[in-house]
Image (tube, rainbow, N blue to C red; front, side):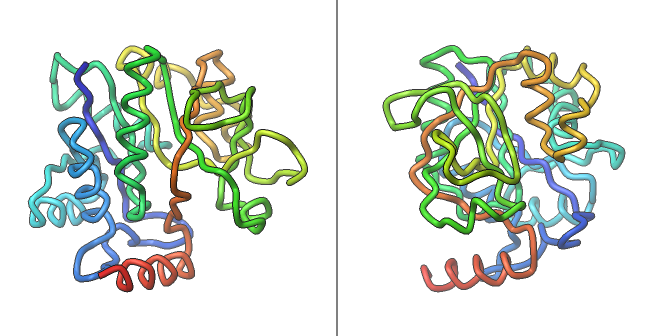
Length: 244
């Protein structure tokens, strides 16, 4: 099966404007994510951006990027436009990788892709075990509730996604910013209007659950941090600069 990785990106993030082009070790966050996706080696990688500055940055760093509309309400709608513009007919799976998670583990990307193929799932995502109790209270850290206990041998269904949660609940994990769609499921997903649940919680994956699209969850080895705030950026910058 052929997988295409599309990374949606925009400069106008409300909490940290301009974050895709913030630099760590001399390279922008978006280009770090692009390189991680390329290293995973599961298929062609393209950045879908609403700003020419992002497109230029990715291309200058040896990547592929495409300019999309500024009118999209979600990243999934943006990747669908990019998919239409690319006009590739041999794509089976579309991986949506968040452009603000430069610490995402390459093995977690590969694992989700493998599980999608093995189980012929319509839509998959990843989550990790919650080690830091602060994640339960952090509204920026999305949590997922699964039908069964999540481990590295299964691919259980998600029953809900939330920002706030009672930490005593069972089968709650830290959701990572990665999705993999069968191409037809992606087409189906973007045809639906945003659901009330999605708008209220600002979580687009709830649109899938509200329209009876099953989401399977892969066990992720690492708990990747997204860059949502200036504090996140400083923390990630320290980790990545220490690694080098």
